[in-house]
Image (cartoon, rainbow, N blue to C red; front, top):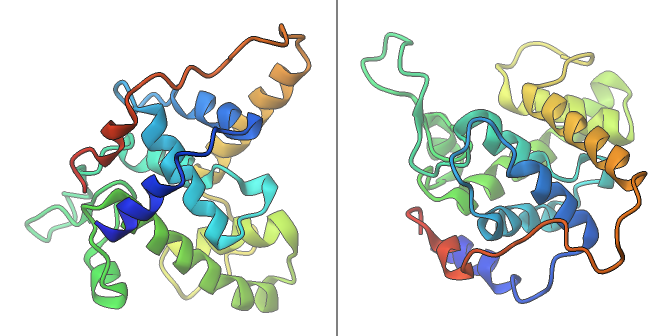
Length: 200
Protein backbone atom coordinates (compact mmCIF):
# COMPACT_ATOMS: atom_id res chain seq x y z
CA UNK A 1 0.00 0.00 0.00
CA UNK A 2 2.83 2.41 0.85
CA UNK A 3 4.48 1.80 -2.53
CA UNK A 4 1.17 2.40 -4.29
CA UNK A 5 0.56 5.68 -2.48
CA UNK A 6 4.10 6.86 -3.21
CA UNK A 7 3.54 6.14 -6.90
CA UNK A 8 0.22 7.96 -6.92
CA UNK A 9 1.69 10.99 -5.16
CA UNK A 10 3.67 11.96 -8.27
CA UNK A 11 0.74 11.77 -10.66
CA UNK A 12 -0.06 15.42 -10.09
CA UNK A 13 2.80 16.17 -12.47
CA UNK A 14 1.66 16.24 -16.10
CA UNK A 15 3.30 13.57 -18.25
CA UNK A 16 6.30 14.64 -20.28
CA UNK A 17 6.46 14.06 -24.03
CA UNK A 18 8.72 11.04 -23.47
CA UNK A 19 6.33 9.59 -20.89
CA UNK A 20 3.41 10.07 -23.27
CA UNK A 21 5.30 8.31 -26.05
CA UNK A 22 6.21 5.36 -23.84
CA UNK A 23 2.68 4.99 -22.47
CA UNK A 24 1.34 5.33 -26.00
CA UNK A 25 3.36 2.26 -26.94
CA UNK A 26 2.61 0.40 -23.73
CA UNK A 27 -1.16 0.53 -24.26
CA UNK A 28 -0.67 -1.38 -27.53
CA UNK A 29 0.49 -4.44 -25.56
CA UNK A 30 -1.12 -7.51 -27.10
CA UNK A 31 -1.26 -9.30 -23.75
CA UNK A 32 -3.24 -6.50 -22.09
CA UNK A 33 -6.96 -5.80 -22.06
CA UNK A 34 -7.86 -2.11 -21.96
CA UNK A 35 -4.86 -1.04 -19.82
CA UNK A 36 -5.25 2.14 -17.75
CA UNK A 37 -2.73 4.75 -19.02
CA UNK A 38 -2.59 6.50 -15.63
CA UNK A 39 -1.71 3.23 -13.93
CA UNK A 40 1.01 2.63 -16.53
CA UNK A 41 2.35 6.14 -15.95
CA UNK A 42 2.55 5.52 -12.20
CA UNK A 43 4.58 2.36 -12.83
CA UNK A 44 6.84 4.09 -15.33
CA UNK A 45 7.71 6.83 -12.86
CA UNK A 46 9.06 4.27 -10.39
CA UNK A 47 12.07 4.05 -12.72
CA UNK A 48 13.17 7.51 -11.59
CA UNK A 49 14.29 6.24 -8.19
CA UNK A 50 16.45 3.55 -9.83
CA UNK A 51 18.19 6.01 -12.18
CA UNK A 52 17.22 3.95 -15.21
CA UNK A 53 19.12 5.37 -18.23
CA UNK A 54 17.15 7.07 -20.98
CA UNK A 55 17.78 4.24 -23.44
CA UNK A 56 16.16 1.76 -21.01
CA UNK A 57 13.30 4.03 -19.97
CA UNK A 58 10.10 2.00 -20.14
CA UNK A 59 11.65 -1.36 -19.21
CA UNK A 60 9.18 -1.76 -16.34
CA UNK A 61 6.23 -1.47 -18.73
CA UNK A 62 7.68 -3.81 -21.34
CA UNK A 63 8.30 -6.27 -18.49
CA UNK A 64 4.70 -5.95 -17.32
CA UNK A 65 3.42 -6.38 -20.86
CA UNK A 66 5.40 -9.57 -21.51
CA UNK A 67 4.92 -11.13 -18.09
CA UNK A 68 1.33 -10.39 -17.13
CA UNK A 69 -0.35 -7.99 -19.54
CA UNK A 70 -0.15 -5.48 -16.64
CA UNK A 71 -2.49 -7.62 -14.49
CA UNK A 72 -1.56 -7.34 -10.80
CA UNK A 73 -3.36 -10.63 -9.99
CA UNK A 74 -1.94 -12.70 -12.84
CA UNK A 75 -0.76 -16.27 -12.22
CA UNK A 76 1.88 -18.01 -14.33
CA UNK A 77 4.46 -20.79 -14.56
CA UNK A 78 1.88 -23.33 -13.44
CA UNK A 79 3.34 -26.41 -15.13
CA UNK A 80 6.66 -26.84 -13.37
CA UNK A 81 5.63 -29.86 -11.28
CA UNK A 82 5.15 -27.95 -8.03
CA UNK A 83 1.39 -28.44 -7.94
CA UNK A 84 0.78 -24.69 -8.00
CA UNK A 85 1.48 -21.60 -10.04
CA UNK A 86 4.90 -20.26 -9.10
CA UNK A 87 4.75 -16.80 -10.68
CA UNK A 88 2.44 -14.10 -9.35
CA UNK A 89 1.52 -10.53 -10.11
CA UNK A 90 2.50 -7.75 -12.48
CA UNK A 91 6.14 -8.86 -12.81
CA UNK A 92 5.45 -12.61 -12.38
CA UNK A 93 7.83 -13.00 -9.47
CA UNK A 94 8.54 -16.43 -7.99
CA UNK A 95 8.39 -17.23 -4.21
CA UNK A 96 12.12 -16.65 -3.73
CA UNK A 97 11.51 -12.94 -4.30
CA UNK A 98 9.27 -12.92 -1.22
CA UNK A 99 11.84 -14.78 0.87
CA UNK A 100 14.72 -12.54 -0.21
CA UNK A 101 13.06 -9.14 -0.35
CA UNK A 102 9.77 -9.49 1.52
CA UNK A 103 7.92 -8.25 -1.56
CA UNK A 104 4.14 -8.32 -1.83
CA UNK A 105 3.84 -9.98 -5.23
CA UNK A 106 0.18 -8.95 -5.56
CA UNK A 107 1.12 -5.26 -5.30
CA UNK A 108 2.19 -4.05 -8.75
CA UNK A 109 4.14 -1.03 -7.54
CA UNK A 110 5.93 -2.95 -4.80
CA UNK A 111 6.79 -5.71 -7.28
CA UNK A 112 8.21 -3.23 -9.78
CA UNK A 113 10.25 -1.43 -7.11
CA UNK A 114 11.70 -4.78 -5.99
CA UNK A 115 12.40 -5.86 -9.56
CA UNK A 116 14.27 -2.60 -10.23
CA UNK A 117 16.21 -2.94 -6.98
CA UNK A 118 17.29 -6.44 -8.00
CA UNK A 119 18.42 -5.27 -11.44
CA UNK A 120 20.44 -2.43 -9.89
CA UNK A 121 22.12 -4.94 -7.59
CA UNK A 122 23.37 -6.83 -10.67
CA UNK A 123 25.09 -3.79 -12.20
CA UNK A 124 28.37 -3.94 -10.28
CA UNK A 125 28.97 -7.65 -10.82
CA UNK A 126 27.82 -7.45 -14.45
CA UNK A 127 30.24 -4.59 -15.10
CA UNK A 128 33.07 -6.68 -13.66
CA UNK A 129 32.15 -9.89 -15.52
CA UNK A 130 31.17 -8.46 -18.89
CA UNK A 131 33.05 -5.14 -19.06
CA UNK A 132 29.86 -3.50 -20.29
CA UNK A 133 28.78 0.12 -19.94
CA UNK A 134 25.64 2.15 -20.49
CA UNK A 135 22.72 0.42 -22.18
CA UNK A 136 24.62 -2.85 -22.69
CA UNK A 137 25.32 -2.96 -18.95
CA UNK A 138 21.65 -2.50 -18.07
CA UNK A 139 20.52 -4.94 -20.77
CA UNK A 140 22.79 -7.67 -19.41
CA UNK A 141 22.05 -6.87 -15.76
CA UNK A 142 18.33 -7.21 -16.48
CA UNK A 143 18.91 -10.58 -18.15
CA UNK A 144 20.97 -11.76 -15.18
CA UNK A 145 18.33 -10.50 -12.76
CA UNK A 146 15.44 -12.48 -14.21
CA UNK A 147 17.24 -15.67 -15.23
CA UNK A 148 18.88 -18.41 -13.19
CA UNK A 149 22.41 -17.82 -12.00
CA UNK A 150 25.65 -19.61 -12.78
CA UNK A 151 26.28 -17.97 -16.16
CA UNK A 152 27.74 -14.63 -17.21
CA UNK A 153 24.99 -14.01 -19.82
CA UNK A 154 27.06 -11.17 -21.26
CA UNK A 155 25.49 -11.43 -24.72
CA UNK A 156 21.94 -12.12 -23.62
CA UNK A 157 18.81 -9.99 -23.61
CA UNK A 158 15.27 -10.61 -22.44
CA UNK A 159 11.94 -10.45 -24.24
CA UNK A 160 11.29 -7.38 -22.07
CA UNK A 161 14.30 -5.61 -23.58
CA UNK A 162 13.49 -6.64 -27.14
CA UNK A 163 9.93 -5.35 -26.83
CA UNK A 164 11.21 -2.07 -25.38
CA UNK A 165 13.57 -1.64 -28.35
CA UNK A 166 10.63 -2.22 -30.69
CA UNK A 167 8.68 0.51 -28.89
CA UNK A 168 11.67 2.85 -29.13
CA UNK A 169 11.91 2.31 -32.88
CA UNK A 170 8.24 3.15 -33.31
CA UNK A 171 8.68 6.24 -31.13
CA UNK A 172 11.65 7.41 -33.20
CA UNK A 173 9.75 6.90 -36.43
CA UNK A 174 6.73 8.73 -35.03
CA UNK A 175 8.88 11.77 -34.18
CA UNK A 176 9.87 12.01 -37.82
CA UNK A 177 6.21 12.49 -38.81
CA UNK A 178 5.05 16.10 -38.34
CA UNK A 179 2.22 16.61 -35.84
CA UNK A 180 -0.01 19.56 -35.19
CA UNK A 181 1.56 21.51 -32.27
CA UNK A 182 -1.63 21.22 -30.21
CA UNK A 183 -2.21 17.56 -30.90
CA UNK A 184 -2.30 15.30 -27.85
CA UNK A 185 -1.14 11.92 -29.11
CA UNK A 186 -1.57 9.96 -25.88
CA UNK A 187 -5.05 10.52 -24.41
CA UNK A 188 -4.59 9.74 -20.71
CA UNK A 189 -8.29 10.04 -20.15
CA UNK A 190 -9.05 7.43 -17.52
CA UNK A 191 -9.74 8.43 -13.96
CA UNK A 192 -6.53 8.60 -11.93
CA UNK A 193 -8.31 6.93 -9.03
CA UNK A 194 -8.29 3.73 -11.06
CA UNK A 195 -4.55 3.53 -10.53
CA UNK A 196 -5.18 1.94 -7.14
CA UNK A 197 -6.85 -0.99 -9.00
CA UNK A 198 -6.93 -4.33 -7.19
CA UNK A 199 -3.36 -4.57 -6.02
CA UNK A 200 -3.55 -1.71 -3.53
